[in-house]
Image: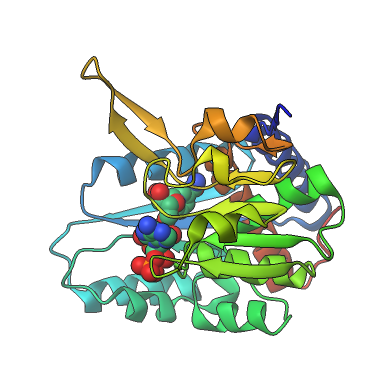
Length: 293
Ligand code: NDP
């Protein structure tokens, strides 16, 4: 079998277009312009690029974008004060604090300060709790993007065997929870899992979120499975240049899977598109407006 490639770029472009249409309706019919505030601490180049892209995409969707750049010696108190100001600002409907934060700042304390209804990253414990108990919270962007792509490909996921490799709070665990909410039979694998090839090999859906280049071998994939590769790893090629690869051995996996996301161009582009969608959802909920469909 040769897998069809799930085009995350096209999927994200489509979602961004839908978000822009919703924003247009909110502006013209309700006088509401959703606003997203992004706080970046320090000068990590990768984070700077990511924040710049978020800003551009937010503005392109017709929303307000607020950016706060803080020095990497900012105190935890100052950062928390900034988040509290944003919580109280009616023009701001979504707040995102770019991670990772410098070591002297307690990330959990900062995240727990974000008002849960403005937590568009879905990392607040209230939102993880709501996801776990079937409530209506904010859902982390990357796993939500993966679910959207899976449902687009497979329709109902009910009864399918799904394996998530990785158990981080931002990807693996919410991903597993979302798959469970779709009535999959879910296995979460991690660094202590015994016989990973066998665990992966029984899955109809494999989601790899590990951060180890090509850890999941093509030969492990069950014929016809759908593979979602969340990993983004920069590796050095023989000519000394670098390239991005995922957590799955793409070429070999593509010969066994029925569909697979590439890296780059798979899950990555979806994350920002879902962030914009989450901001619209957050704005509608805060203003008591039904979200346009
Ligand atoms: P973490 O480092 O927080 O978690 C990695 C997980 O992988 C851990 O649960 C770890 O297990 C598990 N793991 C590590 N080694 C192995 C192994 N040999 N076998 C099985 N499991 C293993 O990473 P994140 O969840 O934050 O990110 C994962 C990947 O996804 C990274 O490449 C990251 O760059 C990418 N990413 C991509 C995004 C996107 O937009 N596309 C967004 C977020 C992340 P244990 O818990 O036992 O240590």
